[in-house]
Image 1: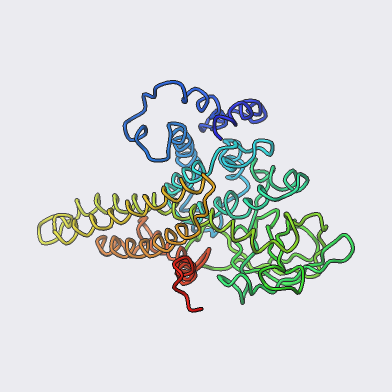
Image 2: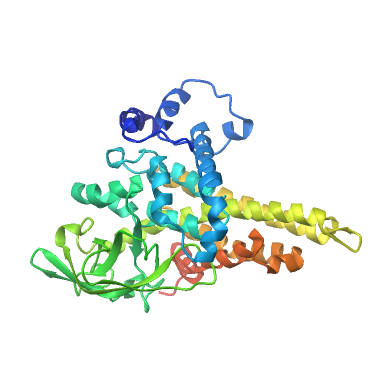
Length: 430
């Protein structure tokens, strides 16, 4: 796919300004030549299971943006409870990072999903969980169904500006009484002529206070719960859309999370993504990408937390010797790093199968289940070795301890992941 997209990408590169931050829209030239020229890349690049030198060039481009435009401000945005999504997304959009696996004709790079995984891994270098999560909503949670099933008109109106960073997207699925149980949502969209009239509300809406549009899941009929839902592109500035509040959370502080209500909101019927009644199915497909993206993102942060714990415990002394030199400490860190590597292998295997068109629901569910549990285990163990410093807000490990707790809740709780795995194992009661 990367080679086929090369010429198209080169053709659109002139539409975007060259980014001094390492914009990646020149990727196509490298993709074309790399298939015919021996690589001088480091051994780790050449031998990687799914990444090519182009993947690593993309990661390097993102790292420059993180170091220059994001990490210097993270502490401020965490304290304020919000980061400037439009400004950051525009920087990322100019660099081609918000649509690496989206169609070229709508501003994307036309590459396969492994590049999206590489983006997610690199965003793990951001020193908080909220900003990567917000970016992930834009790239791999609110837009996959639109890119795959949406009409040309919808893609032009909503997907293209989202990829370019001109619009911020949010996903409206969870409700007060329906989180992981997606089939139980109550928000209704009733057809009246050429419009839908929407009433209801959404909860835990990431980017909700800043979003320009929502990928909304709503009931569009009274049929069976798995066949009566539709995904709708809903502009957030329509009359009747009310941001009730920004939710105060224990973690992911820099990402705004909103409760949203809809009071007789009128949306054109053409704003339905794909077929009416297929929303539940489309959303389940989106969950595959969302869960793999979340796993990839937390892997990098876990690597950093382990390494910073090693560095700190090598300096910090207790009983006249570095904390790290106690066998229980360096053995435990070795165990945790082993678990991280095993999770990384599962992620890369699932990604390789996914880009070949396979159903990876079971593997994605396993990976997300393991990521959530390992993040809690790793955060707790590493924080312990920081002693009193670990109980402050001055170090990454304490922020990770708070932020990572969401992994086992959002995007399908651990219990839902276990249910999906059991279904594929055929162990559920009949």
